[in-house]
Image (cartoon, rainbow, N blue to C red; front, side, top):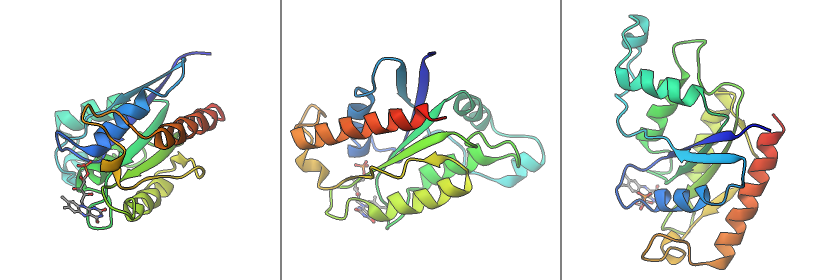
Length: 184
Ligand code: FNR
């Protein structure tokens, strides 16, 4: 079996982002044969259809589309902004979805982890994101769902997860995602 590459898309651009820390912990949980890596979404110009209509896409879009097109699966790790997905992540989805008919997201497996310092665990972002993933035809794992709430209670100063419960949950989550990816 050849190595599979999972692109990890973090919804926060913040240097000390909790979501990014959770993503980095999750990356380490993938087994042999799977490489997970964060794909930068912070340098993408805001989506403007004119660039595609005139065949003048910014270099940042071209690089991103090329990079995402080579991936085998997608993992989205996102905080919630105002009960939805941060604009940076939505922008990345939009950039990858065009030009029309050439979406780099189409027909590949994906999964969602939402992260929040609050109790509601970014449920709103998780499900708004899933709505877009349906349209993009990303085969999104339904179960288990992953809602990491009260995230400051499970992260140590070094950015590692200190909670054994959270670690073991995320390990089982990654194992399920690997099984899911292998279906395709
Ligand atoms: C937030 N935050 C937030 N949290 C939440 O649970 N639900 C929400 O709707 C919002 N809304 C929101 C909007 C905006 C514009 C900001 C900047 C923040 C708080 C958010 O969860 C917190 O800042 C996290 O630390 C952001 O995630 P990262 O950057 O730590 O990954």
